Length: 239
Image (tube, rainbow, N blue to C red):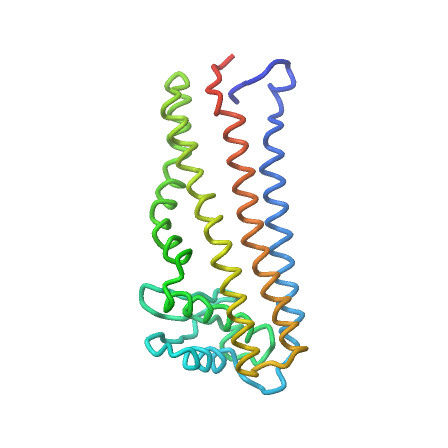
């Protein structure tokens, strides 16, 4: 292990690793919460008996969106909207279920389709950042390691840290996109009377839980970035 600071303590323990552990705990708790919340309200069947697929098709039609397809895909909570091929994909747990949770998730993905149709800027920005963020995440650690190997080359290390920070930028841009999609979803469900007020409140809880996973991911990435800055940002020499 590369040493920094003073004292024998640092030979055996890197205190900044606690930041990584904290990020993992936060992400794990958020994931467990969304899964438990979805399971809870997946047992809450909508009174109108509308499936996730039917709700999605209704919402798209009601918003004048006729160029988006709806398909069922494998997996659990793998629901997504692809603006590239105009396809809204619903997982098996959502597509054929008549639960309030399933309808809420389907409506959320429709919210992204509405964003796309209305040229919602944060959605466009996120799409533009994706390839850059992916490249940054891929090359960040190799650059940092190479910089350390090359006698703590400041340029390589700093570029590596900057590349990793692009992942955080992507996740920060994702937050308003996800929150806005949920806001649109609940509004459309209320206007279309697909769910009554009690059901809407249940759907809101599911979507809030899902949104927390994005907040947790951004926080975990921030903590990882902070760790990299603490470890390498000062371009310390090896003792």
